[in-house]
Image (cartoon, rainbow, N blue to C red; front, side, top):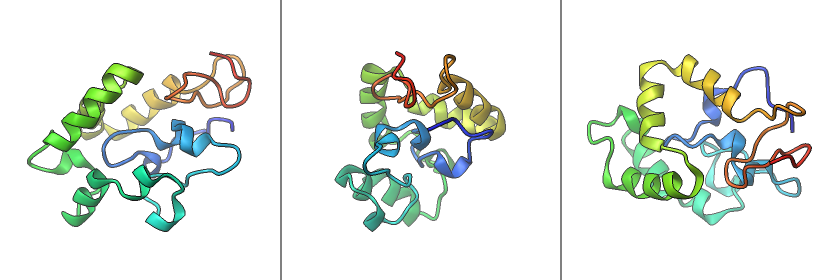
Length: 134
């Protein structure tokens, strides 16, 4: 999959994960439609049953950073895992989206575009979806 000209903000999960660069979305056999899709469209239970997403949607929020409790314990827990395993700070992502969503999305495009072929770099495995370059 090639990186699109612009990253659609709907491909950003409520918690700040870039769904476009997620290994579930990049799966060649069974592509995940992104966090905001209906639960029955997901093949990963963690995506379909996401408590963070449900919390935001129950509060009628589009993003976790819109909540007065941000960053809550749910975000802090997943952030600890994403910071240590994938070097992605979801709290910082939320704050940057809140500050300027368009600039944040431009940085996400730069961060997850393969310099070799223009494919999408998988945020979990750190390799390109097109050329497998690490």
